[in-house]
Image (tube, rainbow, N blue to C red; front, side):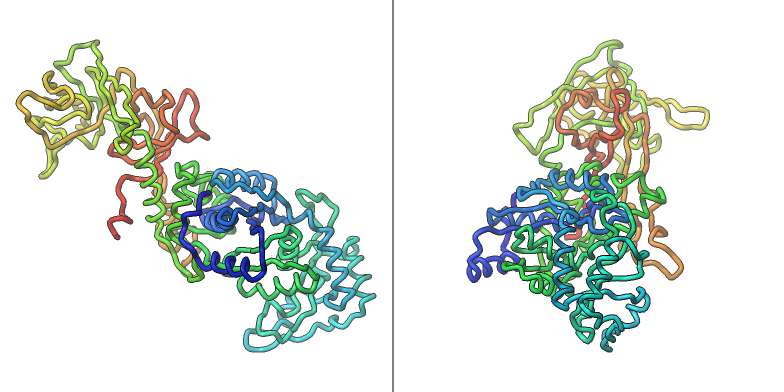
Length: 557
């Protein structure tokens, strides 16, 4: 994940200051996802920032699973997170860790806090705790259990650990300040009772540390120097600092916050994403319409395009929303430079060259990528019967239409000039076959009289055409902000009913089955596509449209 050329930002400036004032010799960062869902494009920004900082300073970068809440955690998510991280190029050179591996240490530190009068067991229910907490304008009230003796607290906490109490009946709370203007400092809960199986710890624990308590401990134990996180944790920073200070870590980490990534026409909330999956609005977490990294990967997005996207939107603390069109712009740039060009007819209609010899074939050289002069060429077969796009023919042309219609001459890409002579229809008047004649002296588009035509269309030979299914994807949501909806509605009301169109019987040139390229293609005049490795078989190829050729974002700019 190359970020050494990235502009300096406020995070780099803070680290430079720490290096100078604290004499830091090794910068150490981490990415701490909760394994309760798949990573999304917003996660990519956090990864790019933390992994990029480590690389910039020749430091270390950890992957640490925040598996302190066992209710929705699953090994499936653990595997997907590591796969996404490595796909992006963010190698966890500092190691892979699990928050649950620190449960013993968290428990030991909790005991020490109790002994020092810095934590107590509270019997208030969740609703009662909210009442006692106060408001933004009014201080909270001390819990009636706040002044329990150290001995009583140690006894109750031990019994909580031993499973003697039901869920929700007790919590362990930090004793800080119920009048603090920061609500997070009003005696926050740091342990809760939860009788449930943990994906790594099994049934060893029935009490679990809360994130605001466990996370700074994990950072400190791993030697993290800079805990980089999104802006919603800014108000939690005093609690982060309180935990590492009260426990007594000699070289505590420094938390620095940055703005979250928001993108139009999509949702980032894992709750919303899970709902889309569970209610089958999409075909799993890796559905190509999802903003998950696995979904983007399956749709054809490349690691480079996502890294470029993250770098170009920059790092700041200011709230902003990025146009989805800019993400598409970044993948277009990458694929324009790297994708193999292929002729594929999505909605085929047969074209018969009546004066071309039956049974004869010939080949033409087709460019692999005109943007790369070293990419070379491949062969395409030409024969008497071809397929062209249905939209490339009109029986009765409209003004400004320069493609195929009776009496008009067009160029077949790489091949010959042909003139439409007639067409056949079915009983409903639908055109089924087009008949044309070719000019044998126009091979390669060059004629003795140097005449020019206004229309050039792509085609595929019926002689060796490869059938394929092609999936055309659009935004999953029509609304720019799907999370905004009228009272009584739901974000799913904003789902685009036309976000997927499946085309069967598409015709591809034969070279597409020869393994040319890396699975990313520009289908001439149709857009950028990739092979769907999940659905494709030897008998049936499936391609997903990554993005159309039209760059609406660039035109806006």
